[in-house]
Length: 419
Ligand SMILES: Cc1ncc(COP(=O)(O)O)c(C=O)c1O
Image (tube, rainbow, N blue to C red; front, side, top):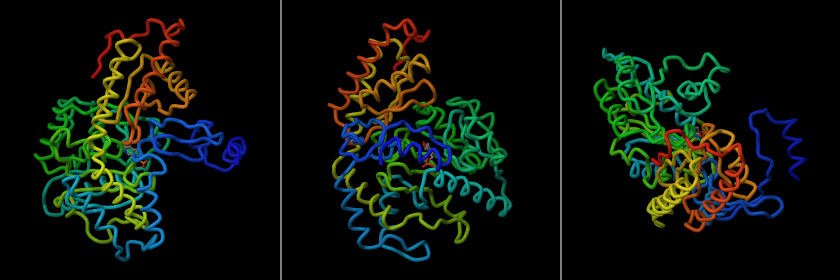
């Protein structure tokens, strides 16, 4: 089916949720996607941080083929061979004790919220004191279901669905004093992305993360780390919180875990896990044999190919190149990120929109988030030569745009801060 046919069919048939870019992808290989006309696109977004091993990866293909021949589904009423095998690997890499499997990021986050509420309920049942409030951060993003969206900062995601889950307060990003001012025994959980993704690639500060840990320790509330975008190897460590030397009580992963098959997981320590007993929470598909088999194969591949080291190396090169670019183009106000989770802040929304469009015209995929930020979440198998291609394209686009009067002299008033 050609693009135009699909466009008119979807316009009539689908709920009006997405403004898709008019490109029809029909295949992919390595770090490239292929469109219906046979053109290759360098993918620096990997389906919003999902296709970590790229496209047509034989490791994934073999895992899918083998598992699909053996068994696709059992429900969680019975055992199958893959769940414990995957859970063991996840506990090893995360420092957590137990896992709950589901099918997406927002479901993993819902499970984390429910766990914190169940914990505070059991504390109160035992005569202790712990409230039901969550503290989330300004510019946070935790998903679209009614609890996740309640902890997501942007008003336009929440207000059309009001009333969302009550008892959520937002704290200024990286302001430890504001966090302390909001904290009390009424709080059952502090919600943190160690690097905010949708919010514009903003790493949390060491001081803020440590303050959150200390506050939670003082009352028994949970420190809940959303690693759905920044976790599972994206930053060069398995989990973003491992850069800070801080262990949360609960964490969530999803996106790249099964390389493109839907899966999510909530991981927690024993203290947190104690709040849940059979029947309190569950899902039909979560932790099914197919997605689990693929996730196992991906973890083994990341380990045996030393991909975390590779992510660190290529990510450092990418960041250095972008900082060099920022020296030449003052419209780049800031370069931020860790590993292959990178954002560049441009001086205006219109400029960011235009650069993203020009990159796409040169068949390089990235996206714009938080209005002025260009975001890079490439596959972990990205190589230095791909980075060089992206930098050359950005350089040429910014050079040609800078001759336009609309963009001249748009450098941020504070000058560049290449954090
Ligand atoms: C940090 C974070 N949490 C939660 C989610 C929601 O994940 P999903 O879209 O799989 O529900 C996302 C998705 O972008 C995310 O980046």
